[in-house]
Image (cartoon, rainbow, N blue to C red; front, side):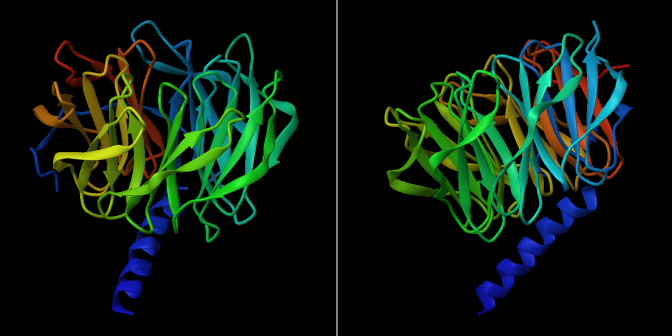
Length: 364
């Protein structure tokens, strides 16, 4: 009973962070003031489109998606129409590999996925079918590298992953089996670069669920369905080579690190974790596979690491840079030149350039 109560408290804590935002640094002190641009209310997810021309931000409090163009120096400028409407509590935004479509997970009890086309200027337009149904509290959405399938982590009491096919117009259609089981509270989903495996971080049971993608896109749990992570894993990503995976554990203030076998199975490295700041909420890898950045939501910074020859992470110098208040999501543009961070309490987006050693510098 005590363990159940402790888990409920942790889940309520993470949920409170998300709701208030609108999907102690142990390695060194935060440095550098940050440059920001305004977003909507409660920005909790940020993504750059594959062309590297546009950035989109999901604002969970006001039900919108902010849209920006990326300038020559990486600085963001709001489009002529600065936001478009989404569903209730949009918590995650992502684009497909072709750069034609954008999908947004709307975190409600009977959740939906908003779907948009990207226009010639980067502005989003709702598709003819503006939304498709998901399960309870969809919180994360990922698209396979070929743009054929989409997967959604449903963070509510259903404990599932929704799975869809993507047609030629970008519209999502639920597969014959619309969901597959996941853990108690799946919080993040990602697809490996080969498009053959899917990984889901589960904040409820402290594991990463691992699946293979079948010929029709349907997911099948691996022989070993889960591997342990830290406390309340909140974000999972795979490096561009497909050799390593990293998980931000919001409850244990660290990042789990794994090698990926030929069959897609994860194996914890030695050491299995590296320190992060307080409540790390999001993790991403740069396109070259050389650097990792983690948004630390309570430290109000971004931890920065280099990736060693065996995939293990090592803090840079400095170990972190300052962000806005409660940074919740971090992404990198496809060129690997710029980093953007959605700050859910200060309602803005921090923007940085990536230096020759991987260290971040705020964009003036």
